Length: 66
Image 1 (spheres, one colour):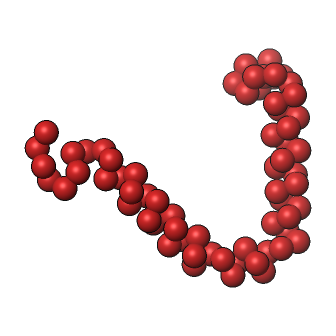
Image 2: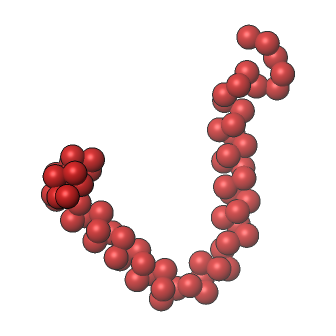
Image 3: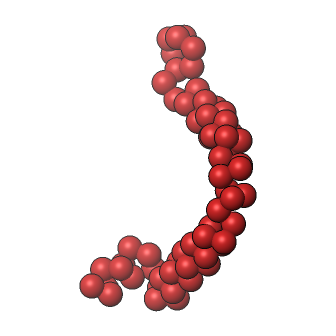
């Protein structure tokens, strides 16, 4: 099991750092949930704008045949 995880992520130090960052992020999210919910509409709008920019890079743009 451990070799499967380290084969995907690299060194055991990387696994430890990912787990530590996940724990810290979960703790911050639990303690500051009101702030996260308050920013949710802005994050949704920003996500739509970013997705719109990335989606226009692929597929030929606005109907132009390339």
